[in-house]
Image (cartoon, rainbow, N blue to C red; front, side):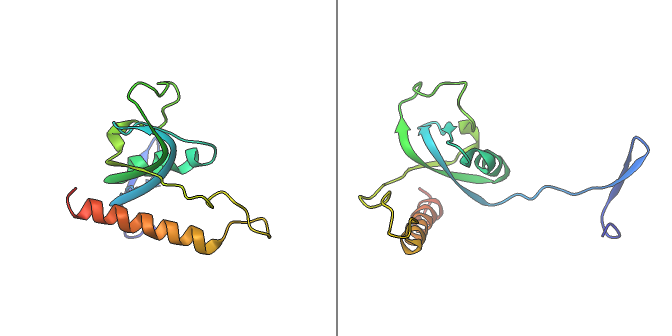
Amino acid sequence: MAAAKETRVIDGRQYVLEYPIHGDLALVKAERGDRWGNLVYRKRRRNFGPVMATAAKRTVATVHEVVELGALDPESIVTPGIHVSRIVAHRTRGHAGRRLQGGSMSGNYQRRTKDELARRVAQDIFDGA
């Protein structure tokens, strides 16, 4: 495993040096955000959203609510705006929160909205907007 990789000795122990992986684009979802890109997450989205936002070259955040500047409590901001390239307001549809008979949301509906979001974001970014 370490045969072709750089190793370094730190405090008398030998370690394999692994460089970080940088993504070209990160799509994160947040609860609230302002036009500067400051983001507040809810529940489990707080696990990977901030990490992905800082690791990618460009970050596009979809937010449920875009608030005015200064409306977010500075103590609750998880991802500062310096890591966010674009903010996209999440459009909810009338049946988005409804449950089906089995108690789960329609996989078809979730997949369709993610595909639509990806197309919209890609068009905005690669058209130079």
